[in-house]
Length: 171
Image (cartoon, rainbow, N blue to C red; front, side):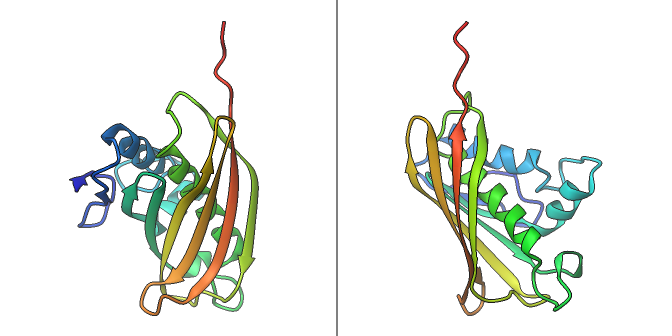
């Protein structure tokens, strides 16, 4: 397993041997650009908030795994993870996952994001987010995302994202 220094935690994410290094670098680079690392500083609340939450754990071809803790900043009135935070995390993991299979010269944009809320993630709980490419073609990529409690493996939320590929201009 190759190591990539993209996580601000003491351990670096692991990268599958069968994944070309430039694909892993693109996925981890995307997460860093989005503010999920202490090494990259942007001056907006959205990136600062998620930089402090999401840590990359594993990157492989068609798969990205991240870990985060439910903090009061992203909790709702009932001390569970806020639905908007779930959507934002699902979007970032889906794009990072798609970057492991889509060429870097193609831009991606989120066309559809569906989320099923099965159970609440309680305050201070550690949650694992696993994203996997379901289908990737010339014009779109579909990614499935699961949110589970780290200790019990209890399924909390499932999401499906459809990402469209922007065509490369041929001038």
